[in-house]
Amino acid sequence: MCVVDFDPPDFIAHTWRHARKPHRCCECDEPIVPGTRYEYTAGSWSGKLDTFRRCEWCVELAAAVFEADCSWCYESLLDDARATLDSWEHAAEHPEAVGRVAGVLRRIAERQLDRARAA
Image (cartoon, one colour):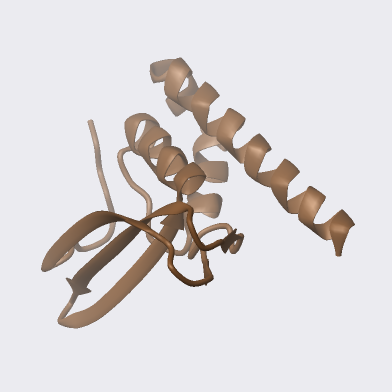
């Protein structure tokens, strides 16, 4: 059974866009370069409007975390994903989703390490 400890958004809308100018992923802080696809989300949480841009890998990660744990929050997805991996309960109940979480986290970490080496 899914239990979450935060209020859902008043409203939310997701769209896929192609970047026309540089952005940064709100989750992994990697660049979203012009020409690449990203998810744009606009919504209202407790009466406060906000927007988020996420790279395709973080969208995939959010889907896997949601399948395994049924909750995550914008701008804390990586921490939520690591918490999902630390839970034996989630690993036993949703082994495929937890495996996907681990795989995407590993790809994100490798990408960040490559960027750090290039800098």
